[in-house]
Length: 390
Image (cartoon, rainbow, N blue to C red; front, top):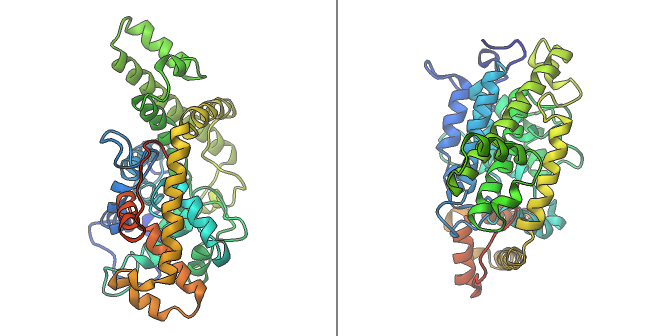
């Protein structure tokens, strides 16, 4: 049963460019389908989640992470009576704006773009779905509904000043009400992201042997998960034991969000999706106790996984890749592919050129960035390891 505070596909605020709706797909379903078919979505296959994408076939990439986020988001959304299709669309699109090499690549681009307005992956996702995807005859971008765009822009909460230029530019044409919270569907997508990476970073760290199962079994929440498995399955195989414990950890996170969300919704008693937007707080979040436990786990991951010596070396090397490519393309924009050169011709100043170069680099996959660096700069990646988390 759909909740009264859920987003209604029959009353969408429309698309920037008016078009006839489908007779057999809802507006949010069409948004989801357009995101899945976008070039930027396919490129997530070869973009870092935590490990450099070529490090191993079993480690998560941005694509597999996005699929896991969407799965969690659908589960929570359905449990709360929300619009599952809108939730899934936002979840699948939430990382489209990430450059190569995860948050390390984003940090490097942000430093380089400081004189030109900075770089933010959430704002870049909006730019991708409203401008940089250029496949349709009638418009640039995917022409998504207002509700989906709002969710991509604001799933982590109201956008604070200064608003990133890529988001500010679009908002002038299509007001996303950046000062308010987003729909409950968008908030679910944000928490699903937290649930997914808190779970799979532990799994990938174990596979990379950056820490042991015994060390995980001493962390809060996980200690009771391992104890439950050991009680039910004494003497269980090492790999099955840790998988069963992490399954339970995953379940604890999901259940905590659902239980607290139901309590918060009952207290606030929103009568519409607008009431959710103007509630003044996030309706979907972790309980205080679990949030405190997760901070302990995040600190463990930061120390043992994200800042291990081999990781620091890798971060330095891929930062150099971005720092070398950006000035090269600024000085020699003719090195950009043919389809980008018209944009360069239309660039009226250095800032406009820098934003084109940033868009191009941000769209690169890990492997293409490394290959481009080797071809243009003679660089080589020698270290192996993790980039960063989240």
